[in-house]
Length: 227
Length: 180
Length: 181
Image 1 (cartoon, each protein chain N blue to C red):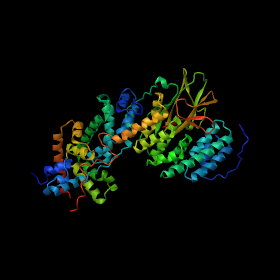
Image 2: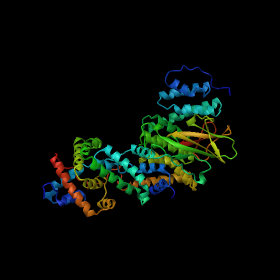
Image 3: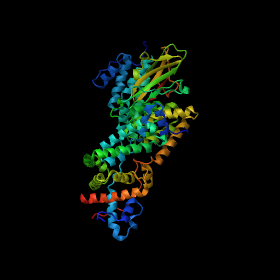
Image 4: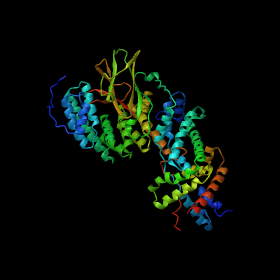
């Protein structure tokens, strides 16, 4: 299908590196003008330390779905904007640049979360790997209809408790299970957050909280004087 | 009685039953020596992320096949089933984790159903579903991470998975989300 | 299951026994670090401890049908790990004390400085000279923070006999530390 394009055909001088890698993945899958746009947006993103993959994915998706090129172009520019927002939100949260985390943040924004929501998760102090999972899960919960407050509330409790990825990744299914029993998404998430917070407070028996300082035992002595 | 033995009161101190102040003056020095011994106790927590993967791999080597989760009838309408076969701890390269997923769609009137998503370049021809009665299924092994997908019915109708979370695809439709 | 709760250990054990073996990974993930510190202090080596924890989980899976109270999986698992640690100690008597200095002292840098680091190493070396029973009661009380009655319940023994064991441990530690200072 050839459509009249608002985006003029431009011949880009293809540099080595980002451009040719992008071109390879798009070859034969997208019309040339979309390939150019992805090359342009992608190279700019790469120099800013942003991931390129979300752009490539969206371009391929749009073409496979038979979407007119100007609509694909608009969607691509939106992805680029979301990537920038996600990166800024993570910086505000104190996290050094991590492309997987930024991509996860872009997904979270697409799912309806705000820049502030992403910053809030980053401020839990989770490392990049944990935060990446947390952002993916937060976006998935939003996609289930969990409102942002309950969503971030639940994910941040789990991140602060140092829960492993496998626990976080179970959250959407657990919310869905509760919703199947009649809870709203908000109720389900709030309930899970309360249970997680209670568990974090109780601490694990009997190893008595390996991650926390042990209770004074014996009672803290004054520092012994050096002989 | 050997000179190495702590006085019984000092042992109570070590047990936490009394405090240094409770010791008579002549035992204070020994009490402080005892507490200094305890100061050498190493309490930092220890984490062993590799154990999960190593255990499941060791168990897997003893198996020939594993039985998929059986769907409760209420969930039969749709839903991606996840068969857990994965190193659950943070692996050195995220793509090292693989999860087997079963996709299911109830579509009695469809003549053809396929699956398109980020994992197969959104190609509607790449992954046809197999029909059994009213139920169409496909099973894929996917890397851990974020995936989006939709079903393509009769080659033309893009249908999100009714049982899955959904996001705006940017083109006026919805994609289903699979977070592994 | 009440709303907002996650699967209990009992739920997972029953599911695994019913054939859903992959869910065992959830139990492993839940508890792999719970006794990691105990195993490390008992064996004096992080590597040996990791092997012990792994073996214990595999063993627990094999014997899962014999877990009489699935909701108390963790206590039952602890005993399997404990046996495994005691078996290791019997096997590797000479190498463990070398590992004590190398494998365990890594975390020292975080707090205290050189003197604290040395006293931690010295104590771990001294611990490795105790009998496994003595070392265990010391680790459970002073590293894991359990009370005597909690330890007694866990090990199915009495508080007085634990105290006797511990008090002998205190004396031996004092002897070891004095002889090597």
